[in-house]
Length: 332
Image (cartoon, rainbow, N blue to C red; front, side, top):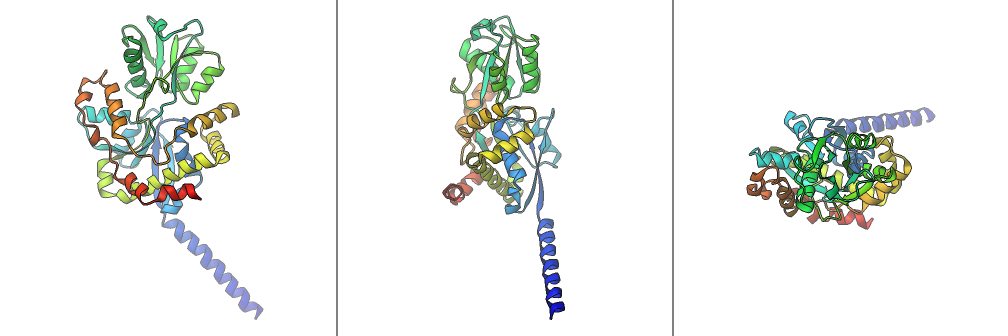
């Protein structure tokens, strides 16, 4: 009798292990590219580290795009989804390449400020000076150009020299070393610049600027041919946002993993500042894209004729929201 019980137990364990292995084998691998190490990418990192994808049949991984524009990863076919600023997608549409769409926008608040040496007291005093921005044509470069010209009447590259330093931390280093007179900083570097004593000349959120800052971007054909994959990933992002808003401990642990080098005070500020800006239902907004196209029109006049409706694909997020999926998360 004892031997039979042992045999049954062994059989049960074997079936349990086999079932788990089989279930794991059925997970569809999905690698998602991302473009920055700011707090608004927290929902993606949480979804990866908490293995949210397994609920939706996904073995979810995330890779940093580095110096490659995230949207370029889409062209390879190996990365079907990216989370990034929508700048690359919008500029592609502006020049006539319309194969990328936004299926979600995690936040339209940009958490960016313009800093300068302490002796510079106003934005206008940057005239004749040098300001560090991001990669040419990328988000920081585009927004700084817009703010200088439309809000303060300074013509970029004529009144103010813009130096594309690339990653935000490089702009901060250039400011610290006196290579530049000012620099645009997004979170968390914004908090580091404040802590270092640099003068904050302009907060872009307070200026009322909205932008499809952290968005989910896919190829149009991916939506057409594999909408189920995109929908499952969007559910992961929605759950990641929920985790961010409701589980501070897990979010800070993920920040420490991805935002290496930032101290606890900076991570706390990043969490508190970002939490309020994340949309529970991250619908892509045609109106926000229209505003962003207006900003980009200073560099690309044809942006005024670009149809924002072709850049946004709202159907999948609407389907998820209409199903009650998001409301159910926050009722738990």
